[in-house]
Length: 179
Image 1 (cartoon, rainbow, N blue to C red):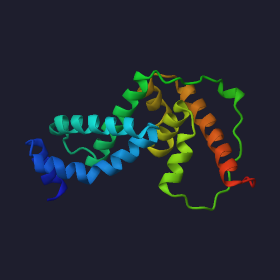
Image 2: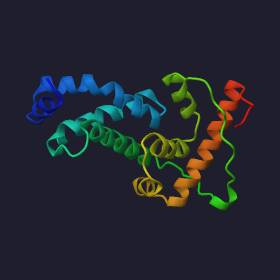
Image 3: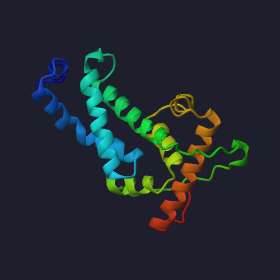
Image 4: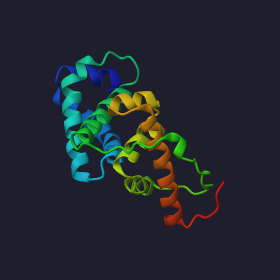
């Protein structure tokens, strides 16, 4: 069954189609949850909540953009709602007090689990903004609106998160050479 048929059958509450959609997309969506939420159990709970929302709202998908992108937005929004419930703390620092350090010159391939481990070492606010900006491609204005923070807070969280990530990489991989 192709994607259009799968969507149409899910819109008719076809359980077999819903099961296929779950099997096809749950692993990718779980990886997104794990990037935002450190605890596997919490990520699993949010994934289930997101798929409940997906199945109940699939009739609102009109084919504008990719279906996978639509799924990702729902999953990311569910993760962000969970983080907001916890009242994540975002450190506000004046941007003129932050100096951007040179990037690490990197010539190694990392496995997904290694990347996830590195991201999980970032404080929640840094990790959230880093994921939204670097991985998902949102702009600071969009991130600020999604998280209820200022644009400058989003920018400072990203800069501080990158710095922290560089330090973690240096320590973990004994990387002293800087680009």
